[in-house]
Length: 245
Image 1 (cartoon, helix red, strand yellow):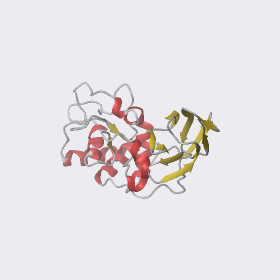
Image 2 (cartoon, one colour):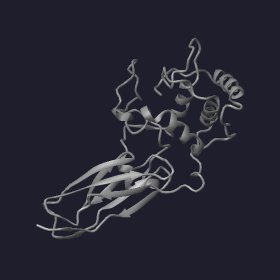
Image 3 (tube, rainbow, N blue to C red):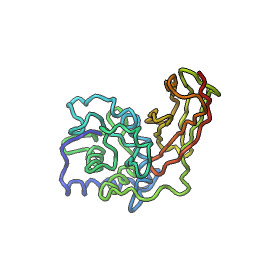
Image 4 (cartoon, rainbow, N blue to C red):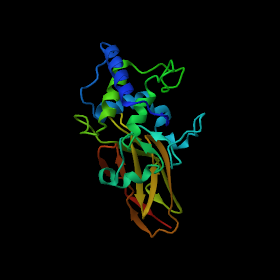
């Protein structure tokens, strides 16, 4: 969902009303005052294939459009990522990506999901994908009017990490596979920290973790994983591993 000229406030209101009428009985209903907990599943399901963790890898669109003064793209699987909420896991976020809670981004989302004057189809999702269901559009429109994060979903569970090929000892190289997941389907990012170094993980899935341990002193080390789902952080002690030379 890239930058474009914004429609007038009056035009947005008319479109929201019309879409709200069509949303009734369309497989869902828009909350009266949506928060990020209501909006995140929509954006994750409809937009994350382009506006998820790969956003900063995507080139400008056919109009050369990208967020101003950044090298990244729009990443809509998080409202925000801050060190206050996520601790060191925030290091894994590409700082050039614009998240959904960044100033002005909600208005750009709203502008792109409704057909503008003279256009038959909304700009996003791009064709041949179908337009969003009416209740999803209405949820996003209402949230864009007051884009708050709000509390996490009830019963929200923390992300988890599992490891494979985990060594008992290491000499010159220390390596293993780390797999990030979230039981609620939320997006996840995190870091694995060891001996003052940080291995960054900007998404769910598997990572081949590697550290050069050739200069480390002999003895046990404890890799620490710090993960965040955008709501809270959690720390896992993955060790110990014995360093031997």
